[in-house]
Image 1 (cartoon, rainbow, N blue to C red):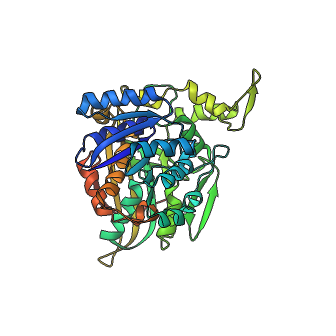
Image 2: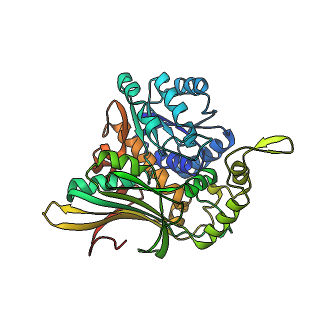
Image 3: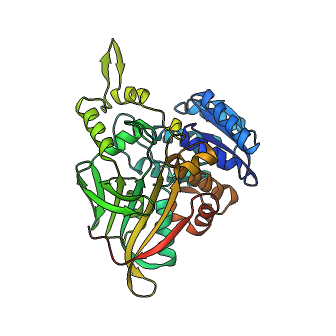
Length: 402
């Protein structure tokens, strides 16, 4: 049994803490910290009502390395689970090094003033964590996270070589709002409006945002339009699976969402550079975030399912070319009934709990900075089946036609 500190009290933090409390044999003591103490206290109350487990709460500005280090030392966890904003990754990594504890997150670092994210900043911490004898596990959400483990599992059990990999992320849920994002609006909109990139024949191919569209019939959801995007797991997969000739990421969006987003872009509300309003400097996208529905409030109204998975084509262990599809389907209403959060938060929060469990139980270990696909997929995949995100593998007649 081990003590853990979770930083971040949004929907993902809520799911992760609820699921940790349901696994008291692994998580003996749980602390939750955020900039807003009232959010932590509300989650703690829900956890107590649903599981009977009492968790400690604290207020922290995770940008403040000294204060975060002091909090970590006060609580004394074996692991810090960073579910805060990706802008804060490096500060929390610094605090973990200073306090001598393991680190884990669900999304890679990006600077506040640029809609650009890559692993180089965090990979640069390799020597620091290795020399300290500490583990930093990056990206234990669903995508990144489970999608990388899916690829590793397919390679371990089914393929001699994977030639192409497509990651398909479909949210078939309906929350009843004219326009709302299912996770942090600021991060969501920065991600969607960034240029698309995919890996092909040893180099990155860049295309305009939302310029490549395909339709796919998702099981238990139906046909949906999906768009080529850049996602951070493409970078780590290209590094750790150098034999792959092409790696792409696709995400579904409804027409209404895209129309609202187009209007917001056209009027400047998605800008991340500061403007002066009433003598004060504000960032339009941060103001937009403040007026949009809080994602954690959408759970009670969201209905439908998510379907997220990998389609891999390559040389099978039987010596034949094959295409396999590995995926999970998650129901929004089931997720809400269990944790009080919709499925987008659930599909990230559960993998965060599982990644933490891998470290705390010693199933995964090492000194340095690691991506998910560097680890043995089997114990992680086993926990997915047991803790609300069951997966399945099926063979497709052939590769994707696009």
